[in-house]
Image 1 (cartoon, rainbow, N blue to C red):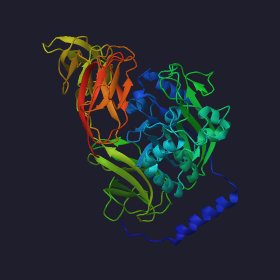
Image 2 (cartoon, helix red, strand yellow; image 1 turned 45 degrees about the vertical axis):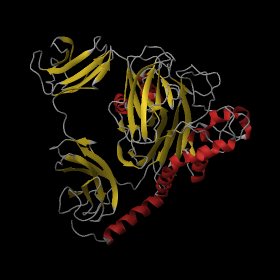
Image 3 (tube, rainbow, N blue to C red; image 1 turned 60 degrees about the vertical axis):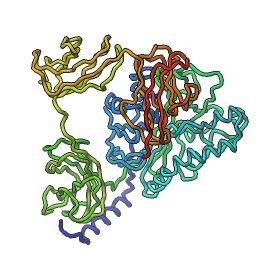
Image 4 (spheres, rainbow, N blue to C red; image 1 turned 30 degrees about the horizontal axis):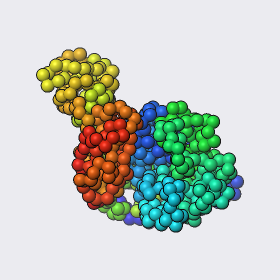
Length: 579
């Protein structure tokens, strides 16, 4: 790289452009953006996963903060054709270009926006405690020690992002109401209490706005309750306390709120604006629509793919460069700082290393990189002050052969098998063979070189089975094989995962009785069956997964029971470790 230098000619050119725009009377264009918060209820499979997809499609949402994805985030994004970020459970129609603390940067075309998503711990839950006789002081003490502590780092991050002028959204299942809803006007709905819930109050003080309540200020006519339409709708306990605990918050002068609505199962219900029946969650979803002003001077750099393979050129699009001959784009290890010698590869915007002409937008092709996490970064004037950046990865291609979705299944449980290396003519096939080598099920790959086949009815006999991919209606095995086990006994497992303190715990159960009152509880190791820490019904599913909120470090057990009894059918011990 040549050394950085100041260009008087370019400074004059920029000033001239500013003056032209200032006196032309032109205003920045804006685009519509719909942001959604959606707790999909333990992976979205309690009712029908396709209804979760349908709800997002009906909403025409562009960005969704998802809660309780339970390992199904990629599946949901794939069904919608969206990008996704697992760490903070965000899916987006637009590219997710970088991770930030608590969220992600999303490139919506006209500018980048910051999106944060949270799922705060559900207990202690203030409205239930007030219902059961706790005082307001006791409830607020719990809020300050629990939810305010959970939000502390994110409050700081959001304030920093706001100071930079980045438009931002905060979605989530907060498991705490808003002070805007617990007012004297509607105290009769809240056991006679007026409560200044501290999380929402702090966000208001920061200048972060509650989209639903801003768009629907009439508390009496538009309560907007998201908890709960039922579990599943319309099943409810007689003493259920309804409230608004799912939110889309926003901040930034570039954002203009247009509308905010709730989605649920019953269009006749005052809390539901858009109905999708059957409704797939125990929460209503929140949708807010905004006009987002374009960033007229915005610089962007966006790799053409989120993931590349080794040996594949890295192609990067850029726009909004200053037009200097020495504006440049570099590829960096994601953890590497800016500075001389730190780029892995670089080019001036005209595609050369001599910088003969200034290009403001275009594409650059770089040499391939080894497997790893990287960033493309845009700089002006041979400098190292970063104007724009975007993440990408280089990943190894999938090995030829088959990989089952998991290693252990229950009787008649759906079995998904991913494959790669097929010929692509539709005559390659996947089979399941028992230990004696007898074929018990098979499916064609349907002309795809890589993809997934699903044995929808699973297998009806317990045992160990081999999975193979065969070529072209013959018996030539393609690539690696896999093995699975089918069990006939009631089973509960964490799939070998060792959770860290505070992390959500996904518990898988197999071969339930099918009774809607089958349940799974989490216990301290050695506790009696009646001394559970938390529990959930299986909703009548024979096989499935439940997601529990995180626990402190220690030794625990997950236990499986049938039909509301305390007769243990299965258990598994696990340890929660410190981060």
